[in-house]
Image (cartoon, rainbow over all chains, first blue to last red; front, side, top):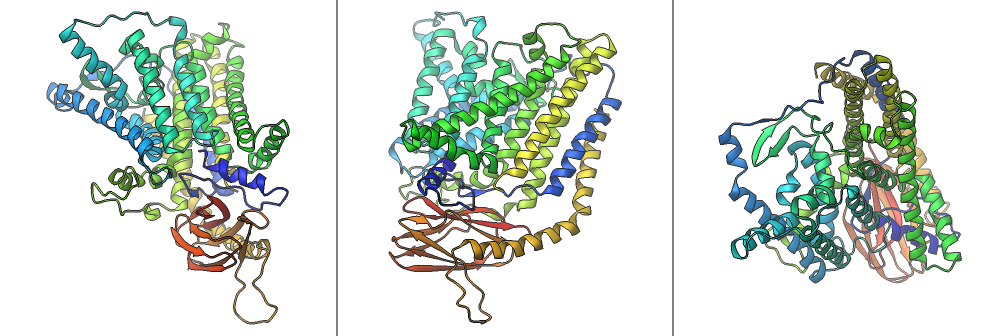
Length: 474
Length: 145
C-alpha cells in the first residue's frame, strides 16, 4: 500500500542520514507484521519439500478432478438462498455500497483512516472477498454493482422498449486481457501511486472504472463483459473455483473442492492475469524487505537526477519494482513450462495454459499470507467507519466509538496462519498439476517429467513466499 | 482425497511438532534479541539519557526531532512483550506524537520533550509519528515473549 511511499520519501528528504529502521507503512496502516522467525522458515520449507516428494510417490494414478461433478442441492435449500428476492437484495446492497464509497470519498474527511472509502476498498473489498470467494464461491457475482445496474437497466428497458441490442461481439482475442490491465492499474494505485489512499482519489477512480465498465457492458453485453473483461468479476471468479459451492442457472449446487479449476477456460490473457496477481502481491511483500528498502532510494535518486520530482521519482521506482516482481514470477512459471515442453512438444502458449489453473491456489495463498493481518485488524475498522463514513462525527449505528482490538490474535498466531496458507496453497497447486498431468499424458514418463518441473515451480513460489515473510520488516 | 487428507495431517503434525521442539530455543532467541534490542535502542537514539551517575534509573532512549525530522533517521525501539516501554521525544517543532496500535497520543510543544511509559502489550511493528506532519520518527517493535 502507498503508506510506505510517504515514509520512504521522508527517508530521502532526510538525506544522507543513516536510517537504522526501514521506513514503515503509512496512510491506512500504522502497523506491520514481524518477520517469521528463522526456525519457522526452516521447518516450513522442509515441510514443503517433504510433502512435495511424498506427494509424487503416493498421489492417485487416474485423474480425479477433471470430470464434471457439480450436482444441485435440493430445490428447497437452493430456493431459500437463491431466488429473485435475494438476487435483487444483493444487487441493491452492492449498488448501495458503491454509491456510499464514492460519496464518502468525495464528500468526507480526506484522512484515509477516518473515511469509509479507503478501508472499504483496500481491506473489506480487495482482501476480504478473497477468503469469502474461496469458501463460499462466487459471492461477488451476486453483489456486483455494475452487473446489478446492467441487469436492472436491461429489465426496465425490456418492459418499455423491448430487449436492448448488443452492438458489438466480444472479440475472442481479447480474452481476459481487460482484466489484466484493470488488475495492474488497481495494484499500481495501491502500491505505487503516492495518493493511492486518498479518499477523493479513490472515489474518482471508482467513478471512472464504473463508467468504463457500464460502457463496455452496453457494447458487449452484460455476461460477456462480466465474464471476461470486468477485472473484479474475473479476479474473484478465479478464487471461487476453489470453493465447493457454485450457483448454476439460478440453482445452488455443490462440487468437489478445486474441481472447477481444471475447467478454467484457456482464454487469452489468463496466464498473464495470474502472473500479475502473484507478482504484485510478491512486490508488496518484497517492498517491506531490506533489499528493496535499501535500493529504492537509489532508484529514486536516479530519477530525481533526471529532473523528476521526489514523489514522481518514487512512483517510478515502485512501478519498476512491480514490473520486476511480475517479470520474476513470469520467468519462474515459463521456465517450468519450458521444462515440461522437453517432453510435451505443443506450443509454449498452449502448455502454459494447460497448467495455469495450478497457479490459482498459489495466488490465493500469497494474498492471504500477505494481507491476513490487514484483514483481521484493519477489517475491524469498518465497524466504526460504517457508522461514521464521512468522518464528520456522526454515529449511525452506535459503533463510531469503537477501535481496533489488536488482542484478537498475537504475532505467533499470524505467523502460523501465514505459513499454513502458503503450505496449503502449495499442496493444492501440486494436486492440480498432478491431476492435469495424468489427464494429459498417456505415457507415465511424460506425466512424471511434467510433474518434476511443476513441482519445481511450486517449490519456488512457496519458498519464495516464505522467504518474503522472513524478510519483511527485518 | 484420502491421501490429500493424510498429507494435510502430516503437514499439521510437522508444523506443530516444529513449534514444540523449538519452544526452548525460541525463548532463548527472544531473550537475546531483547538484550540486543535494548542496547541497540539506547545506542541508536543519539542518547541524551545517561548522565554518567551510577544511579539505578535506567537510561530512557530519546528521539530527537529537528526540523520535523527524526535525528539520524527513523529510530527503532525493540521490546519483548510484557516489557515496560519507556521513551521520550524531544522536538523543535510543535506537533502531536502518535504511537500507532497502542493508539497513544501526546502533544509536544516546540522545543519541548514528552515521555511515554506503557507496557508492551501488543506484538508487532508499530509506527510512531508526528501526527500533524504525517512524519514517522520511530518504529516500535514488540516481539513475542
